[in-house]
Amino acid sequence: AQKVTQAQTEISVVEKEDVTLDCVYETRDTTYYLFWYKQPPSGELVFLIRRNSFDEQNEISGRYSWNFQKSTSSFNFTITASQVVDSAVYFCALSEAVLGNQGGKLIFGQGTELSVKP
Amino acid sequence: NAGVTQTPKFQVLKTGQSMTLQCAQDMNHEYMSWYRQDPGMGLRLIHYSVGAGITDQGEVPNGYNVSRSTTEDFPLRLLSAAPSQTSVYFCASSTLPGQGAGELFFGEGSRLTVL
Image (cartoon, rainbow over all chains, first blue to last red):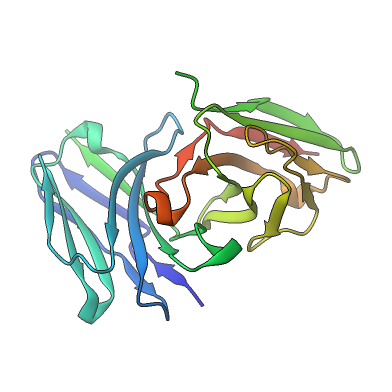
């Protein structure tokens, strides 16, 4: 069965610090997709990144970077030089790309609440 | 540019009442789903649909019904509300994985309180 674990419930940092949010997943499939979503205090869910299981290249987008390691079933998210606007709950999610009607379901981790203080 | 539209945004119910949360998307997405978000639990999948006329259960389907008569609409029905259904509900849609790996587009959420 699929499972996503975000062991860090809450993280608090001071502005300009780097911070890494951990995500560990479980799946029996060889083909799957991993996602990160951001939920700011306003409540909406904002898509950040999608990564498929065949692409282990790390990705960088501005101050955000993602480290995907299949060997450890991890898909960690790092924010460099954090800012107050990064304060939000961040969710990691997993989707198995199976055939038929099962395809497309996202299973979410519990979320990590990041607080960036000025 | 509507995307995914959920109504109502807020609702208070008494135990035993019924109601329907509406969800509509204008992106011609085949896949639609409903999640509930509770503190410390992340988002949990209630029901989902991969196309008109096709629905299936997610992780926490009990107490909820869905139907998918059109591609655009995916209403969630609470037949007899219980306090345990107090939550924030999100509707989401996407293309199917084979057509783009299913990035979910979410509605703004509906906060439901059952007294």
